[in-house]
Every structure is written in structure tokens, then in C-alpha cells.
Image (cartoon, rainbow, N blue to C red; front, side, top):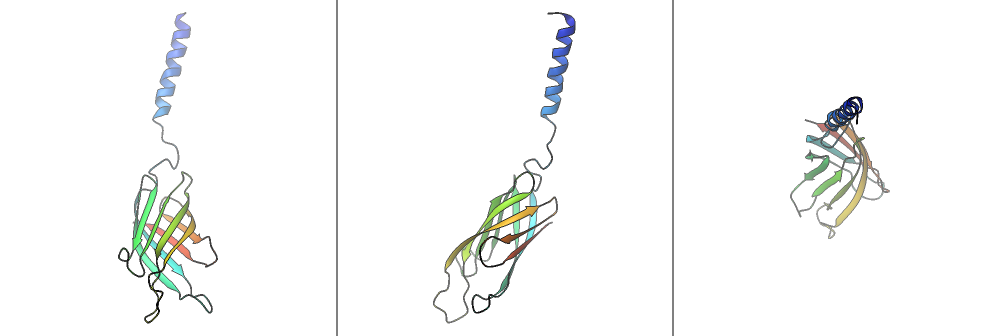
Length: 140
């Protein structure tokens, strides 16, 4: 093999090695940090009461976890899911209802999905099922 071909191969290898360390836009960890979440669900006519929860969330390696209230108590909610490199996410909310005093259906479990979109410092989303709820995210 001639010196010219060896030089070309060496340059190709050097280029591959240098590109291997180049970050891709919105790579894993881009959204990592502490976030504030506001979940707003308005009152349903003739149905469920409205509520607004504000709670902290953390994103580590583009996986979000947030929690409102005391685990396994009325009004408790968790919000979890993975953010894609483009900032899109399908999050899962799970919790226990918080009914008005005197109602027997306290602490009924529920689950729903939230479709969300994040950028470096903010995000927004909405519940994907019949009841309209909006979620807003702000990075600390």
C-alpha cells in the first residue's frame, strides 16, 4: 500500500474519531435539571371539580419524574416519562383522587397520558383523554 493511501486512511480514521465526540443537538441529557410543573384541570360541567397543582419535577438523562402530594394519600399524583431528543414526550400521570368531604369515593386511582413538547427551558402539554387539562413546565 502506498504512502498516499496510508495517509488517506489515517485522515479518515482521525475524522471518524473526532466526529464520535461531537454532540448531537438535543442529545441525551439536554433537558436535565430541576423543573417546576403547573397542572391545571378546569371544572367539568356537572362533573369533576377543577384543580391546579404546582410541584417540582426532575429530569435526569431525559427521563422526567415529578410528584405532587403525599404518596398514597388523597390528591397524590406522579408524572413520569422519557423525553425524545427533539423535546417531544408522552408522559404518564398516575394518582389518587381527592374528593370533597363526605364522599365515599376518596382515593380512587386514576391514570392518563400527557402529550408534551419541551425546549431547553420551557415545556407545555395537555391531557390526551376526554377531560381537558394543561401542563406547563419551567426549568429552574
